Image 1: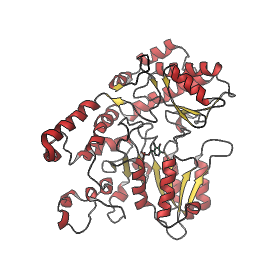
Image 2: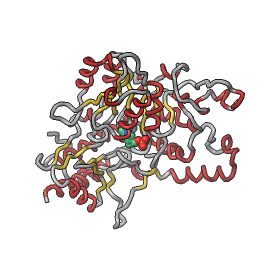
Image 3: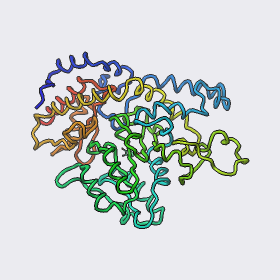
Image 4: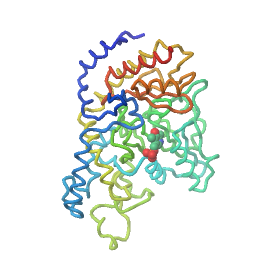
Length: 426
Ligand SMILES: *Cc1c(COP(=O)(O)O)cnc(C)c1O
């Protein structure tokens, strides 16, 4: 057992004082309990906290709408016409992409469908999509209905990858084995960057290599990975990815999602896609009825359909700006310690009462720990909530705790860990 942590509030407090990015916490609003005290918020995996900079930015857009109306497209403080271009660099850096490989648009599941329109090309024997067992329901629905829309039966054409024998997680070897055995049937592998339920982080670089060696396409759902773990989508040669911005990216409920298309596909104007005017080359976009054929803009921008939803994109100016300022490197370094500390504090709890189903290897997880409570999971969750700790609960019996390096402190983790140990003792 490591000795780098101590289970005392004094240690946690000192650790916060030594943390160079601790002041970031003050840039966020925290929800409060009935006693008026800020809650220990460990739900960043579900809905990130609001950056305090957001209300002024929203007010600016509303004022510009009122003041300028249609002329706001060009003359607003942040012109609406090119709004999505504000995230060209920051959005790309967050996921290890080149500018032009990322566009912020729509929402996650919509983007998964749009990506499948292009990248799921069932042909001959190669017709199948691989997803993981217990995938997030929206992903399962999207894959099944997408396969159906091509006239294929999901029962036959969706391969569900099960956890390794006796475990909760799926090893890279299991993915490689499937590809070695059935690679010539597989058109697309669609796996998570970090699995929402178990918190397992997948090795996207190695998986992409294996998928490509089998002749298939590698796409990833980064809902729980973007803003949580460092990513290098370009260098890993990932074909496409999609994510949401309301979890670790703190851009608010239903925020505009992100989409990555590798440069080598972005330059291919011949790829099939569902087009709309916003994906068209801006040089000819406004020729409207004079324009006969759709000419996709190069890069991920060429997958846009509609003009940007400005009010929903505004929080991204604040949140992606924060990520860009701090950098995933500093966030990940703190994240490893915060989550390691939580694991350390829970360590003494008897395995009869609790099992951590998230991998123990820090490289194989993000910030989240998923705690399988052996008895009365809901009551344990309620006991934590009564003490001002707010994790989340997933039926039937998993409590997810996600200390987020952007705004959680070591004292937060100490409070949550000690409350949990106490709840499970009583
Ligand atoms: C949060 C989440 C979603 C939500 O999809 P939306 O289209 O943003 O509503 C989908 N898939 C996964 C894996 C998620 O974690």
